[in-house]
Image 1 (cartoon, rainbow, N blue to C red):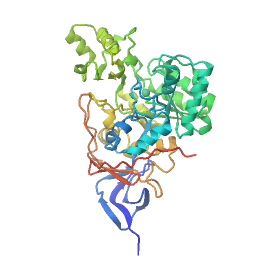
Image 2 (cartoon, rainbow, N blue to C red; image 1 turned 135 degrees about the vertical axis):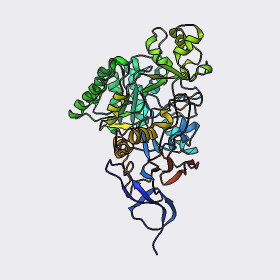
Image 3 (cartoon, rainbow, N blue to C red; image 1 turned 90 degrees about the horizontal axis):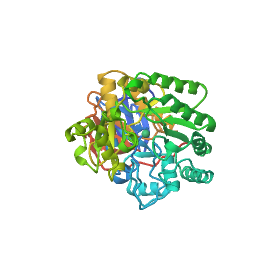
Image 4 (cartoon, helix red, strand yellow; image 1 turned 45 degrees about the vertical axis):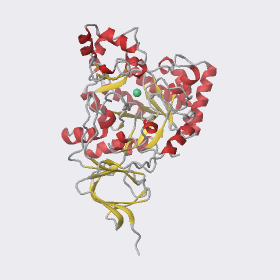
Length: 486
Ligand SMILES: [Zn+2]
């Protein structure tokens, strides 16, 4: 008697994640693994995938889902895009170490009863999570807890303590350390101290994941700093959300890529992630210190979440100032000095599409949404739309990159970067993280003023379990907390 497969997906167009051209075939899943590809035998359950593309589940290389996995553990905003693994702990902020019962005063707003990474992951696995997790430990989070939010260059003793805390997270399975050098306290810390901090993860084969010090006029200097740390420490470098901002800098992203290419030729291990949008997003107070408000830049800002003035959500600062009969600078000052200013988020329209596409098309580029989950207001559309937008708008409608290339940037490229050995490809023996989508209809639907799930994502399997069925969330929480392969 021939054993039946658990599941057979019939007649899909298989994009295996390698970037090679797609082929028609079936996929068999047994338990958590891909058992067969091509023509596969009978199964207990079948899915007719005629007209659909099958691809490895997408890996979101840059997220701020750290608390979403606890507050809304299904992580529907990612599953509905076909994402099966999220990278957390980015831009210097992680959910651990944590000191309950305080709420962290950063873009994550960490609340929970855990202290260490081990306790955080136990909490997540206790209630289950919808997507897999790759976790980094954030330097800002560690230094704020040990030395305070307003701390600057750490003393020798403080530096030892910071490194000890990072080592502890690595011992518990973190993938590396992240830095966020436009945020406090990271922006006050010297390159030399950062090198010592990053060196902590070298013995583990960890990665330094960095939001660099400047993405505008001093982009090249900021890249040089990150590369020098990689040179000093031998630690692999992941540049977060590579871009160049500010109209007078538009057209210069190619120079940044040349710097990265040159470093790569020198043997530096480099990768970077990109989101397919022309607006950035983050806390308003980070961009506009009250003592020095850039009015020209403020005119590019739209408020997306504001607990102090919810009536401003979805509106441009220039429009609000005009209505109130005051200057843009005074509106910004009012917002960044309000009681809950830390929680005010904005989008800034300051990236040129040509630069974004130049970054996206580079062979080292992978896709990372950088979305910031938020209950109030309307999030930047990248949170719900990054992957369908790349496939629908940039592959199908604009033909700026092939579907096979785009999918590799969502699967095998990040899997190799983060050393997820048996994920990121549709191959026999690999874990069955699988997405089935309709290439004719896949599209993002959200905008900067309205929140909406994408279309065209039909089925998603996480570790072999059906998490999205016929575009509907099943509620199965099959996600795992992943570890890097040796
Ligand atoms: Zn960032």
